[in-house]
Length: 256
Ligand SMILES: NC(=O)c1ccc[n+]([C@@H]2O[C@H](COP(=O)([O-])OP(=O)(O)OC[C@H]3O[C@@H](n4cnc5c(N)ncnc54)[C@H](OP(=O)(O)O)[C@@H]3O)[C@@H](O)[C@H]2O)c1
Image (cartoon, rainbow, N blue to C red; front, side):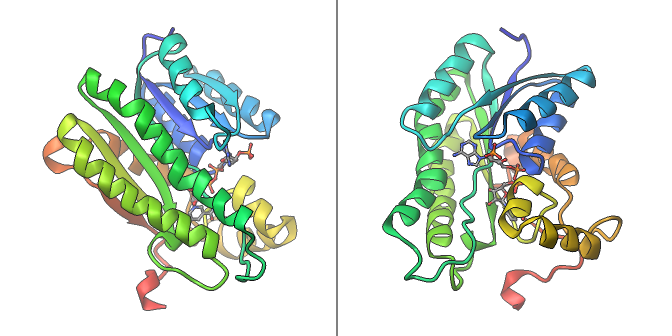
């Protein structure tokens, strides 16, 4: 059991999840990093944080599976320490699929990974946080939460609904000391485990060459991590419930 407050990251790849985990660990949290399939990537993240003298453990699990989230939260509370902050970082970007290509199963999976999984986190953890006097739930989101688009049926429906779930949770839980923030990232991120896999190595490398490496035209996860930390430590008289993030060179979606 760690004496430090726990920051739980659900969806800890090399992009937003891992970098927000590093930031909270650097600031004195015991970080519990959860990802689904890449054990080597998870071990490397934990090793990097430990090598910096900070505190982290990794858990490999599929958050969309029945009872996975509920069991995880109970186990962390019993064995790691009190969860003060959750960063819910799961998306459901399957790539563009026409209506014909979007199966019932895929549509349901999008909802399971995003809206329903967040609901399960809140249902399990909110009573525990409330009994302790408060907590923070930070939810990473994307442009599709604000605007539907061709090929985005499963993704947009899932995360658009989740945005309103965040508002609903906030309306009920903020007076109980629990702060929920919907953080939507309106641009591509330097994220090899998500965007990199989605577009393939060749296109991802091309994107980095065109927009990254000093050009700052893709979101740099390490920089976003500061925003997450700030939001988790706002005074309750000035809580942010929604924030949008994009690089200097991007136009907001409503201009396109
Ligand atoms: N990447 C972008 O360009 C972009 C743009 C806008 C918004 N976003 C949002 O950013 C968030 C993701 O951040 P990121 O792209 O920087 O990715 P990341 O933090 O590098 O990685 C996210 C990790 O989530 C894990 N994951 C996926 N499904 C899971 C499940 N069912 N159970 C447990 N873990 C699971 C994956 O683990 P494994 O790799 O081990 O399977 C993946 O590595 C999402 O909310 C997404 O909507 C991303």
